[in-house]
Structure formats: C-alpha cells, structure tokens
Image (cartoon, rainbow, N blue to C red; front, top):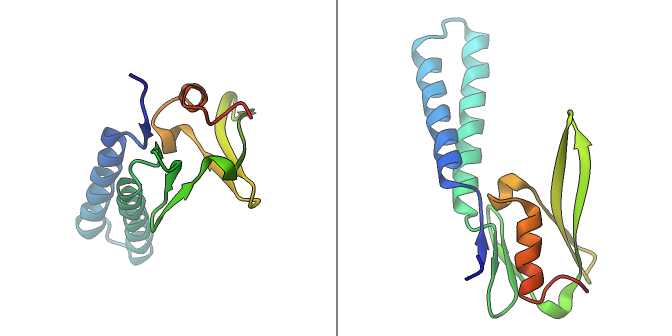
Length: 138
C-alpha cells in the first residue's frame, strides 16, 4: 500500500525540542553575561517555536478523498484535483549538495513548496505517490 501522508520525522522534531530545552537550561544556568543570555534565550525560544510548529503541522501533506490537504502551523488547506495546475520537482545545487523541492502550483496562482524536512521523505518518492494517486502528470 502506498503512503498517503507526509510530515517531518517525529525524531527530528523531538530532537529540536530537546535542543531548545537544553539551550534554555543553559541560558538560565551557564551563561552569565546579559547579551549572551539574551541571544541564547532567543535561540532557545526559536528552536522551541519551530519544534512546536513542525509538530502541529504534521502531517504536512496528505492525500484524502477531497484532495490534497496541506497543513501549516495555523490552518489546513485542501487543494482539490481541478485546482491543481502543476506538480513538479525543482532540483538545484546548494552548498555543494543537490536539493530537491516538491512544488504544487494551483490554478489560483498559489505555489506550495515542500522540502525534504517538510515531507520527511525524498520529494521524488512523494511525487511518485502523487502520480500513482492521479494528481501529477498533468
């Protein structure tokens, strides 16, 4: 059976949360200078916010009977089959390695861009699953 939901990996999101908690503890106990304490507090809050947002947005992309459900930090949006103009992979070199992005373009001129982090899988395998479900290849 083909996978129908994709989101950030649970271990990676939990790791971000643990790193944010450890940084907050370090900020409160280890860092003594005020500027350093402010910077580490901002970094800890940022890590925790990103971990919470990534957890809340799981699954980031899902195939349902109504269409593709794209879930963000604050709301979920359903993109129906007739509203999808194009689904493609964009590939480019960045910092010495190849990066792939899954792009979903809608007829309402909306572009949804999903990375490996967002999907928790290789964007090519997600495109294959979307093609098998009848979404891509238009």
